[in-house]
Length: 341
Image 1 (cartoon, rainbow, N blue to C red):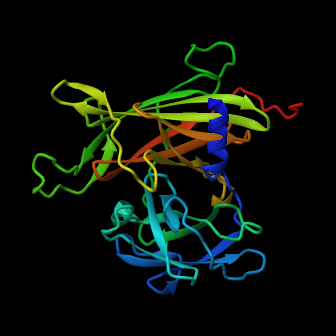
Image 2: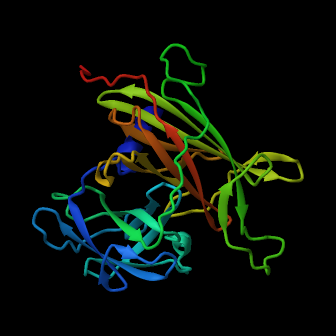
Image 3: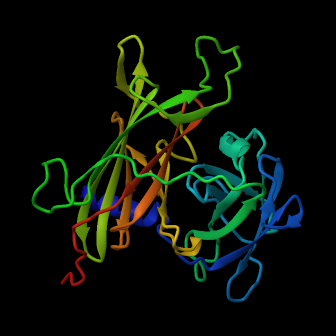
């Protein structure tokens, strides 16, 4: 039953791995149709979507997880990640948002640091058209923009992990394809509940060491099935308790985008491929009552195996959106069952 519930969550709660959208978009920055921007300069972004075949404007959309559009901006080297939202203007089909400026929208906390350094950025727009006969529940439109200046890229590195690849030789708590990655994160700019009058410094999350604010553990489980494998990712977050000199489980999360849980963006890393061909998934986490673990479910149609990924897990606590990045290569020895009869 639990596996069935997880599968239903994967199919209906999460838009998965859409390589080719049925929509295309026009992007206007400060009123100009362009793909070149100035880094760190505040700008208004507007999107207008068209059908890829008829070229007609698409104007009818519905909110998806409480927002008109989820907008993801990822630097080409995967070193920066932004998840914000654009608002639909009436029935015009035009979506708008302000980037590189502090936002009063509590869901757009990352807007202030959307694009801060030169280089190429992936722009992924996730919208939900009303016409279900023509479009999917969500459409992922992909394009790129270039921030002016000397390009500055960082090397992509896989996180140190334990991964089981054998179907027979693995610990009881592991299975083929399972991973275990533990990371520590330092945080700046958290509000001081004991001194609410103090203005905190700029909020940021950075790689840390034992004793810093958060310890985050990512594990997974793969279950073979018909036409693909059901993959469950589990995120356990602990917070440093200075009075105990130890980490305690974080169970109190804020409601965010219509749910108490988290969101996760998975994007394949492959410099040889174009953005249109990269595997992508937007997963929605479920937190079980009284349990610190969040579960993210993905139905993989045997396309993840052997690929590198960066996953950004996001949750909201103490009024702040936290983003925890993980990088790994997925290896799954389970073979897809093609004939299920």
